[in-house]
Length: 115
Image 1 (cartoon, one colour):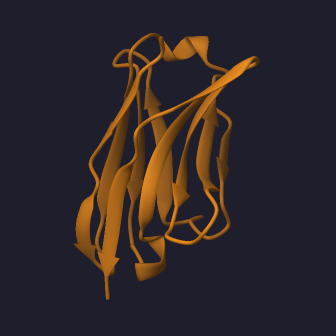
Image 2 (cartoon, rainbow, N blue to C red):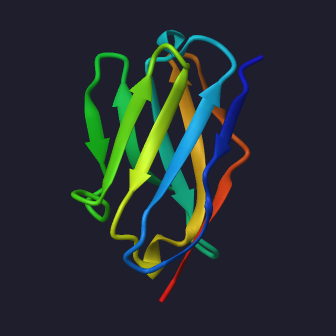
């Protein structure tokens, strides 16, 4: 059973930074891609950033230039470095790991950006 454990969320002022981590229970090479999604109250879950096994990156337009996704294959962990945070970035952030036949999700970590 795949387990994804997120950490690093919290409360930060606008303009500040946070780094989220997602540790997988097994080798992240077993996934086609991993990424971060977020869900704000009353809104649908949306893509934030993804990274494929080949290192291809994809970002939502709203975070381009501010957020950076990366991976550590030795630690089986992905990261999301979030800079220049805005109040509209407030959401629960979820880690996702995708295989051809299934998706796996972490429990989520709350990010709150105060104005």
